[in-house]
Length: 310
Image 1 (cartoon, rainbow, N blue to C red):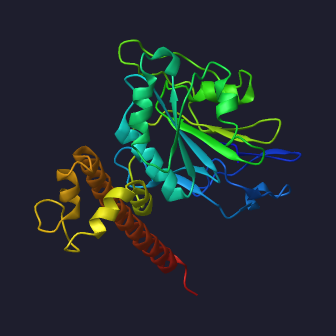
Image 2: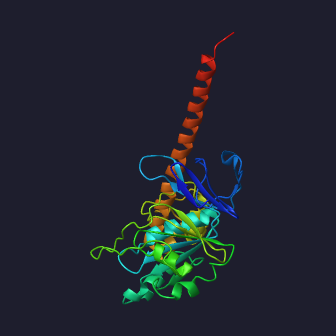
Image 3: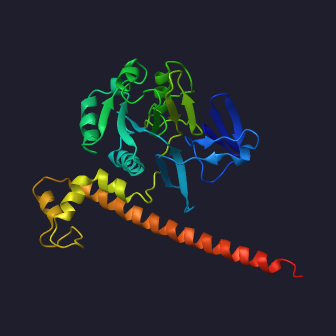
């Protein structure tokens, strides 16, 4: 599936281009067993990965962002947009989905000291590659070649104005999607991509361009957070007490590491925030699912009672 519209899902395939009815469980990147005679009966196939977040606002639902992605490029700029906490969120969600995360630093050519941004980004995780580049040059084609191979699906995610659409155009080596500049006063971008869209290169690379996302709430991402903060979770496992709060308890390996300078206090604070957020959202969503299930049962029972008796 290449796009989600209000009136249905746009699907592409060998000799196939059509629409099927929208479903709440489908997202961009999903594969279907297409039924040409009855598109509504097309079957959603099992996914190998799923990127999701808690829906923005007060809605306690999960929003599906993309499926069957092999590599997520978490894109940020070497300017005021750079934010370690936001990068950690993208990487944690990618790890939870079983997707390879790569951090891309754009506008390196406009920065006096791009290496400082590279070093800061490398601190996110020693398992994540960091690439600095000029998205308007020929660099993306060469530097992203290892991930943009035929048969692979890659996704560019990040805030508005960081160069996601420019990178998509660079991969295609043509002006495939619209782009726009950023505001000079705060380096914030303008939305040029308004919906998630999957594009296919001539040699068979599926490229996903996404709208800017500044709100990226964790939910059901405990494993991804643990993988991202493997240094913290490893220390926590060595604490004397299993329920250690890593505050003032005796035998706390985490506070000892902070005292010795082996762990950054700010990193510990970000870990705590993500863990607390994930637990709260996961519990809230579980309650919502339970309530929806109970409501559905009640509706079915009412409708059954309304059936005319003979």
